[in-house]
Image (cartoon, rainbow, N blue to C red; front, side):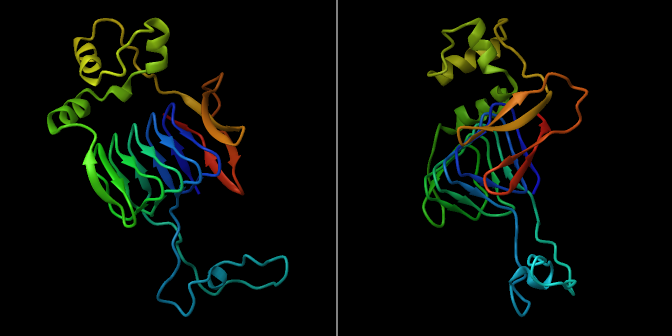
Length: 220
């Protein structure tokens, strides 16, 4: 159940994620489900007993068939906010800057900066006008290290997208590129976070998240 997460993204408590690629600066809310598994729907039963022995402690048999339970990776862009208890189905692509409303069930791709709600999820608006969205996608602000930039300049106009875009387009020395490095996914107080590892010679780390899921670290 491989998962990759970009820098500064986090999972709130009780979120369940599998077979997904999550971008940078994403906020994944409480009890969100982003799952990549499937079941055979055209067999006698959709139950996994026909292709894996999940009861090996009680019964000894070799499953007669094999089934690839994981299909396409679910892709979450950068700066995506997924509200509490939302469900994103396998193989869906969520665009950069999108917002998924609490409790939404997302079965289709979501465009950049769209806001979707409901079951099935539907677009109710976009965060910005078309020209601003094009500008955001061109600047790709998530390639920069905002916390380090704030450390250097505390009055960055993050609450004013147009002013911030102006600043980034000028490249006036305040920009701090987000340098790819190995980071460890870890849990604290029920949440899931990323931290930089002290040495880039370490090739892999993993941490348990929730009830039995495993998130593997990635270069971000």
